[in-house]
Length: 219
Image 1 (spheres, one colour):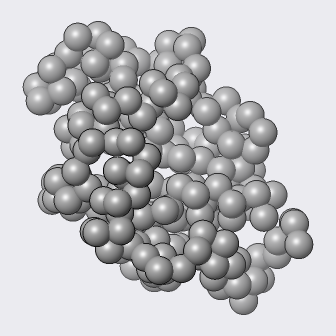
Image 2 (image 1 turned 90 degrees about the horizontal axis):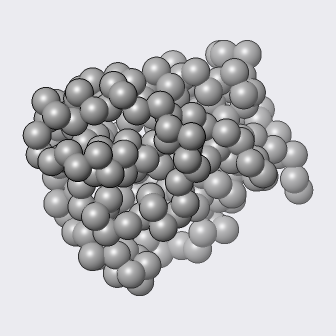
């Protein structure tokens, strides 16, 4: 195990993994990292440059010019692109939601961001969530989770958030891409939170970690 442990939390769109990961990090006193926001930031940067996200060569070229940083504020990383900290409105705009899977499937983009994610271990213990954290970014982690929910529940959550993207299509693109597809990582504990509360899902993660010797900082 690394000197700075990384708890990996993967799952499909609108599964609740971000909310679970954020609260688990708070309970443990770890830094929370939302890697999806890094891909969203790259998508925002590509779109802001007027690049067609379906043009993989153009995306690849533009991604190499993007300077992305992850400052920590109140226990979680933000995303700064070329000196600008992106807001939740920037990152969750419908245009970004619709395009992020196209940008994320470009191998060179994933190479850049996986390297950036691994570099974040210098911050100390992490709870990192995304779609390939336990399978690709930190496959050696001893602490892996996969948060899932039914397609119906996830679609309803996205609609309740005011977003128009289709989770089924994002699932298809993320699961079938050639580079780092969405999978259940080997050794991951799967938690289906379709019909349990957020606190119950967090409690399940914390209970598994406690059995593995990871103590909560907040009781």
